[in-house]
Length: 180
Length: 123
Image (cartoon, rainbow over all chains, first blue to last red; front, side, top):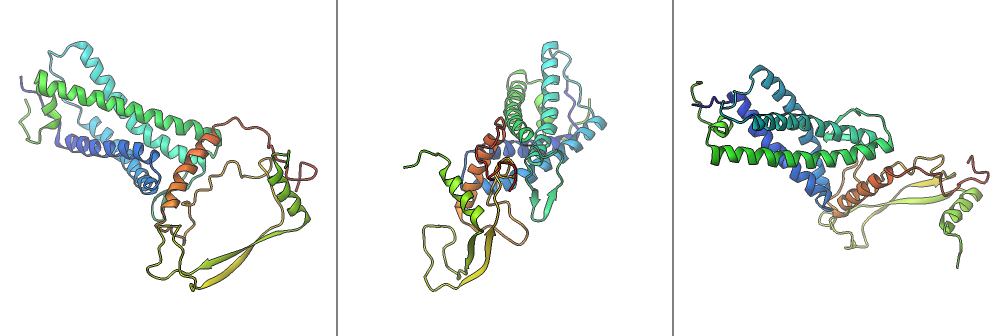
């Protein structure tokens, strides 16, 4: 049975965000471990994080307009639950990480500079303890996103290489196929 | 030998209570080619110096009244009109101050260990 493909808008959003988020995760890990490179990495991390927030909002609207194609009927129920749960987790984290980052800088009283004179208003009250909690939360959520990404990637590879049921190609193929 | 671990604080508090403490702010104007990315390399001695002002401190506040505990003295949080140089120390300080700020902010807040005024509640 031919697996229906994701619409082009969904595929473009998926792969653009995949690159952005992987870049963000590695910049995040890199910047907290670096000294000389800290400043320019932070300078990328903040506007890129806000870009992810904007993109995920567009993506959620896109998904509500164009729902994901149905999974193959022969897929076991447990795997369906796992896929749905991981997709929901990814969406929640894509919203939560930039928002927690933004709130964390607000609570610390930092200026939230995007580029040059362009900066964002605070979204949380200035509070030392709140900052400390949000800063830890940001790290924990980032590791959760990394773990969920690895699960997502592993699942995609299982479908691509072992099951070969068209689920991977429904997102990964650039060739437009006629809908079944 | 001193037995008081706060003696540097106490000396400064005593000094300021007996009169303002002042620092002169001197700016050295670099020339093209002067190294800005290595603080260990001195500039030639004939560079122009400008005395741009005097910082006067006439009273002092500790954690109890002031905002010194919950501030990150990040050298890269700059006002408009001041740009960072390519000195790698700025980024390194920004990185480690961010770490220390985070750890400090998460601590349980205890009363100030240093009392900056004679009566303990005012300037």
